[in-house]
Amino acid sequence: MGRSPTPAEPIDPSTDPFAEGHEDRTAPELYAVRPHGGPPNSGGWIVRVVPSACPALSSDSAEPERQANPDLFWAGPALGSHEVIISAPDPVTSLAQLTVEQVSVAMETWRVRMRAHPDAACLHLIVNERPEAGAAIAHTHAQLYAFEFVPAMIARERERFGAYATRTLGSNLLADLVQEEVRRRERIVAIDGEAVLMSPYGARFPFQLLLAPRATRMRFEDDGPIAASMLHDALGRLTRRFGSSPPLNLWVRTAPSGAEHFCWRIDIVPRLTHIAGLELGAGVNLNTVAPEQAAAELREI
View 1 (cartoon, one colour):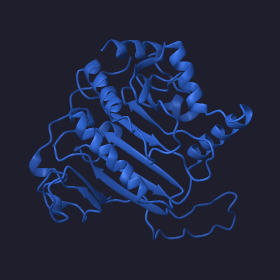
View 2 (cartoon, rainbow, N blue to C red):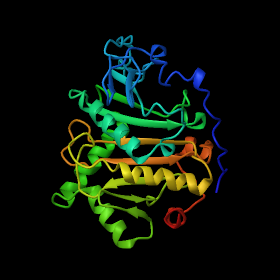
View 3 (tube, rainbow, N blue to C red):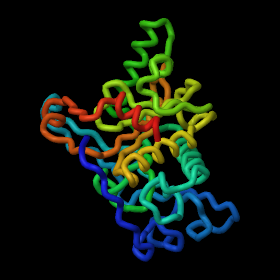
View 4 (cartoon, rainbow, N blue to C red):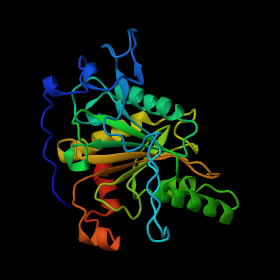
């Protein structure tokens, strides 16, 4: 099955840059939720948004030097913006350790900040939890990348949605997939009024999960349910299955520019195994836990 995760080391509040009272240890905030009011960069917040200290994207990214043969060597500027969304003042390492109400407020803030970039070509929101999954700071947080271009992987998904709609006279690829998975039931983990949680067919990693909305909507940031209860439930099931919150990567897929047919979703990938030469060199993933088995185990929890 892969290694079982060990519990995360507790966070030392005195060294936590995302702790309440340490607002001076980050860049000046872009946005915050303060139920009882208060000035920017002060306490009393329940979610806080700041620019990334090490941004991967910026509005003034330099144009790389042009190569004599761009067919062989091409690079473009890393244009866009990169924000950090601190999910709660609690010094915890995982969204799973927050209440469902806290997760709901954090996810609503994801949507608020995605809406703050209406001209972005593509929005990509991620959560990395634990160092094994790439988290540089232990305190649970999300990162929002607002690209001025559409990354190739997401562009391919956009084209696949469009091709499926053309072939089926307007049907939605993810909606049809969810409908068929619900009919079969073998990979379904849970269903509520807003979303369906499943271990996807052909999952690349053990206990990989996909959360899809019950009602088709192209963009996560548009009005409608955000499935906070289902996301909280999914993370809780993983925590109970492994005895502690596993290292994981999570991302929100929302429609990029140019999409005419799409549906948002959330992907959750626990980091229980290492990506090695087979995956990196051949693009072939060796998943030691069938998605049907993973779904059955998580259903029982």
